[in-house]
Length: 557
Image (cartoon, rainbow, N blue to C red; front, side, top):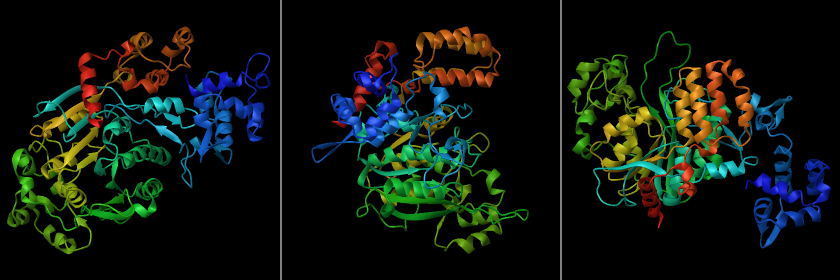
């Protein structure tokens, strides 16, 4: 039973708290709470879940957290089943405007105390983000963060049972996957490197292009908080950002990892070209923020690490020596890393001419100099290949300096998987999380010669979300709605009968609004199948999926 239902049933046991028609006298309850009323406290203490939620145990004494209780009572809507009408009222106001209506961040930000699920399976599929308030929706959040059932598992170049030392590639929403990793890998990850959405308004990453500052901060906060729990005591996290959000990101990371654990800011100079038409200084670098998980203990193997011969062997040889895209070199970016992909200095000079002089001017400066042009097409084809976003040298330098052989490296914004490639070649174990189908096609191609175990989070309502996103017309959406009524988990506030009675109004909506409405009525806690529901027949978990799942979670022992 949900917490608000438990509380409502408990309060109704006291006659002074209910009206003649059985509704809760909210303001009476609040008054009792603010005055630390003995009758109210005694009533709450009798229920174990309410006692755990609203009381703090301080040296064996239970202290009533009346502020939390009042906040819960004030914000929970007991009198109207339409949460939609109520949700915009949550939050503080500035100038009589709700924070949700503002795009401002000061000491706090709109919906800071919420969870942003933030996910989709394809870059072109857009949907409104769902925020779960940590007080109002505690039950929903608990369900959302439960470890998930796993499906579509296979072992690439591996035989026998999986082990704690295997590499893992996991497809699914990265927030929910991080919580799925927690039972097995808590305090076991030595190094985390992430290259998250920069919130530029034009990133290639699918769901970030309409983030406000506040939404981006909430999105990142949720993921960084759980990532911290995965790090070893002497582990480190590297977060790569650019000028759009790096300053906000620094303050956010300070709040999660502690200012004392901020080790350094690394500048990656990628030598972008200038233009006479520009009315500002050209932006030629990204910022990489390094935090340790401890103020006294972390891995640092020295900063002066270079690309080494061991990278140029084995299954990656062709990829490491692929052709560099002319689309980039012709725009004047310095391919310093051509040497590491098999070219000598003379070949470099023949290709780039006088641009070598520009390189000489910066090569001894105190920052990391790695050209964007070092991005290579992973299949070696100039026109059909996929360009990696970051140079190998950049990722190699971080992995070498901040982990040792056998350590686990995690990247939960894996993209095309360069972090995993470098971790594998340097003798580290890797865990990659990525949710976009398009990108997983590339990952599988790149990792053809690598040993790893592949998993996906088992979808449930996510399947309907994807069908809605693909639908081309109202007829298809009505068919999906019929299937949803039979097989999906719908928001418990939804009146299905009312929905069908008003179906003509639904048909008259623009198709994008029809899609949004169907997104909204799905229960967002059932996007993937929770581990606790593995034997629930409604979720149709196969015996094979049960075996995959149980094999993975057995690693925690």
